[in-house]
Length: 172
Image (cartoon, rainbow, N blue to C red; front, side, top):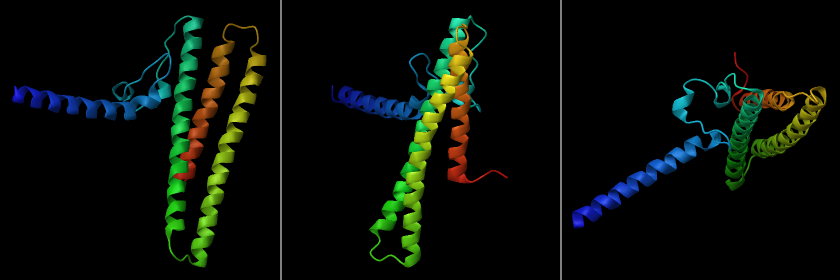
């Protein structure tokens, strides 16, 4: 009986660890209409999965799913960059005595954090305006929702690349 309880407890602890690990890794790819596992992706970005050539309603729904996925990735990347800046700022603030260069560096990191938050806010406004422009351009057509979403998807992909450049520097 003791062996059974020990095995049950061990099995439960192993399942819990695995489940938590999967949730953390896969949650950014989950939307209300799709769930993408890391195994499905290979070497492609989560929003690059093919929607297929279904009917217009299916393509509209798929484009919305792509937007939800790419937007969730943007939120994660933005949060990661803000977290990194917060860590640097916190470490500098913890120092007992700051040199003049340390103070300048601290002020610059605070400016970068404020700029990043402003960039994200402005991006959201600009993306909403571009979506409104596309909505009026395709107004009345059955593919209007898909086109509005695809404009927003492309803008969001570009914004993710901008965040990558801000974090890692330009390629080349």
